[in-house]
Amino acid sequence: MRRRIEARRREQPLLLMTHIICGYPSLDDNWRMLQIMSEAGVALVEFQFPFSEPTADGPLFCRANQRALEAGVRAADCFTLMRRAAGQLAFSPLMMGYYNTAFKMGHDVFCERLAEAGGQGFILPDLPPDEAGGLEAEAARRGLAPIHLMTPTTNDERLRMIASHGRGFFYCVARRGVTGAPTDFGAELDGFLRRCRSVTPLPLAVGFGVATPQDIQFLKGRADIAVIGTAFLKAWEQGGEAAAGDLVRSLAAEARQAP
Image (cartoon, rainbow, N blue to C red):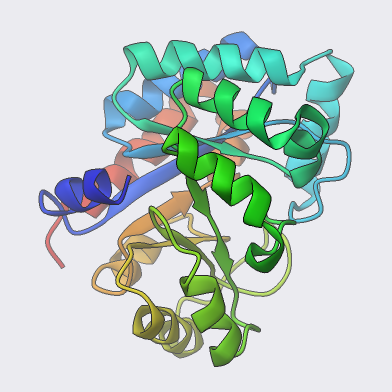
């Protein structure tokens, strides 16, 4: 995964990673979302497997998780959607979710099914890297990248520990709190990203609050990947396919422009 990201980074200053919640608003809507993302040139997409207690998520994503579960969406549906996307669309799919999903399946079955679906790795925000040894070992056997989080409240010693578990890239959380709230793209975030960069040569993705072309401009030269999550779903809910498409195309266009 690292090589894929670095190859695409040589073509443009910043890549985009977007996000869907499998089954919300529906699996058919998800497919159209994924087509829009692929057509815009998005490099990576998180496929969030719905879960009843999504602790890293704000109100919009929590509601979406609940609606997907109420509609009967299960892990098998998520893997099927990912497999279809991996075979037809031009981005790298990642599983995003919570450790309970991998635990209930068993590490070996989870990694096997994810690899068979074309997944490149996984993001489990409630699984600390120093407790992930068994899952990381299975992931390595399947060629999957465990993507770990770095947060602004993490001290330098722990950042170095997290960095020692790195494969693929790191997800840098732009601020404290959950998804969906505004982020101040300024000196504090710049300092945090410098700290992250000092402990790892792997690409850095920045998420939580990325929503405008100005945010994309700020991240150029500071990160490798901008993560668009809540902003896309909010645009879809407020203005449908047209509004969500306009948003991702405008951010992708800005990401391609030289700083």
